[in-house]
Image 1 (tube, rainbow, N blue to C red):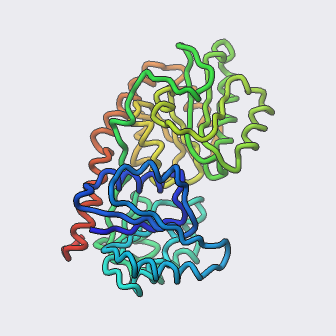
Image 2: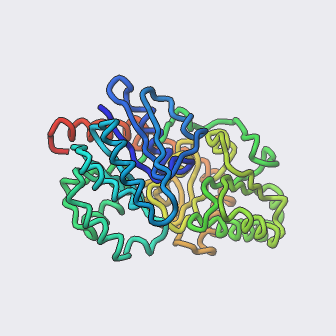
Image 3: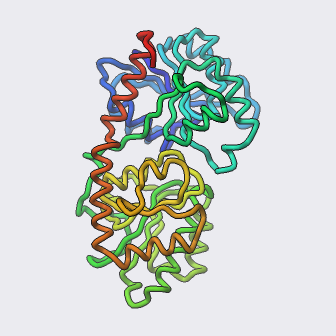
Length: 375
């Protein structure tokens, strides 16, 4: 079966990493894949795909209104003849019309989340989704929140939606004593707080920096044992560096840039924090859970499907500095609870969010659609 995955750009990110996990896990004897990028792709990131029979194409869409890429997509689809087109998020939705014109019989669209809480209520995106919905065979919602959005806002019937949560490789991400070479200075007694992601405003790492500064101030006797690592790169990097300098916490904070070995980095942490303003189902939360870490996250997207307060972490109000500081302090005060919540995180990841479970759901969906049975 030939699956064509359509994305805006194939580069480091949660959505794209999810595609890699699907491709690497589905049996190569049963599938071949094409990845079509509306703009372009990162060749190094593409090398993470271990599956056979995977091709990648770039349509080189220019910024702004460049409708020529739709013509290029049409000719490409006629050339490669996929059995299924699987697009992701709003910026690839119009490709479903081209897929229909090109004669692709089975068309799936995945909704992964939003860049802001306000995006969920905007009328124009809802109208666009309604407009294209007759062309789509089936929807994949990564969280309960996106599933409810599709049914309540867009008007998609339940029988056209399947919720498939992201999965995590629990062998690759596991508790370990291996320290990351990018983690910065630590000691055996250090409590290392960390987060991984794009340094972008929606990820709101500024909130974590301010909460960590409060933590250092309130725990002056042991402040030299507290560390913060913010791994990733993006447009907010300089702003974060300036904030760290302004708060005079440079010696306790590390911004190592993009991380090529996330499992090792996760293994060097004591506590994972996701301070985002908006999320879908966070891959990095899943990775931290599989790594045996307690998780503190803001109450956005599918956070409550992954983190159960008082069991494997804590959930704070969105963009609430005092609550985030208090959640961090809770774990500083109780190392035994930190370890117990980390152990619970690992158990949840293994039992409910394994990559095998996720791949099995996608395999079942693709097979049912192409064989004409109800998805």
